[in-house]
Length: 248
Ligand SMILES: [Zn+2]
Image (cartoon, rainbow, N blue to C red; front, side, top):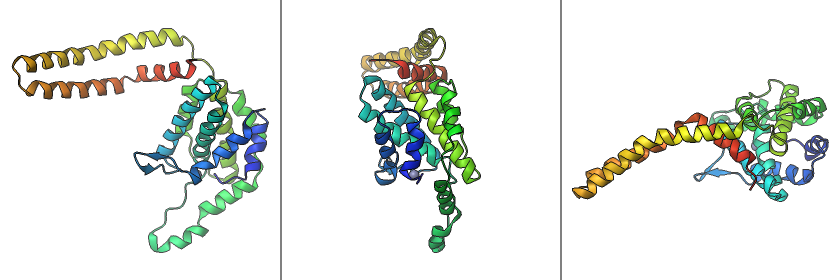
C-alpha cells in the first residue's frame, strides 16, 4: 500500500500505540527490502504474501511477549503491509509490449485515489471492538478479498489493520486451550506411533540382515510420519494457539 505515512499514523495513534512510528516505518519496508522465501521474492497481492503476513504476525507476537518492542514493531509493520496490499486491487497484468501502459492502468489510479481518502475511524474502532482469537483473525486475513472501490478498499485496510494489531497485543484467549492441547497432543502421538513403530521394525530388520532395503523402508515411513504430522489439522491449530499464548 502506498498510503502516505501520515495516513497510517493517524489511524495507529488512535490505538494509543507505543512504537507507532516504528510500525509505520516498517510497514513500507517490504517494497524497499522485500521478503524472500527460498530465494524467491514474495509477490505482494498474492496468497503467499498473506502467508508471509501471518508468519510476521507470529514473530511480532513472540517479540511482544518478550518485551522486545523494536522487533515487535518491525515484524508487525511488515505484516500490515501485506495485509493492506491485499485490500487493494492487484496490479493490472499486461503483456510485455504493452508494459508502458501499466503506468496508466487502473491499479495506479486506484491506489492514488485510496491515498487521497481519509482513514475511516469507524473501521478502526470496529476492528478494535472485535473479540477474536488469533486463529479467527488469521482466517479473516486469509479470506479477505480486495475492495471493489477505493472507499471499500481503505475501509477494509483500516479494519484489517486494527484486527491484526489487536491480535498481537490483546488477543482473545480461546476457551479450554490447555485441555484441548493435551487432548490433541495425545491423539497426535497416537497417530504417529504406528509409522514410528514400523520405522523401528524396518531399521532393526535391515541391521539384522544388513540390507539397505530396510533403510529405504524406514525413510519412506519417516516421510509418511511427516505427512501424518502435517495433516493433523486440530493438532496444528491448537499448537498455533498455544504458541500464541505461551509466555517464555
Ligand atoms: Zn506492496
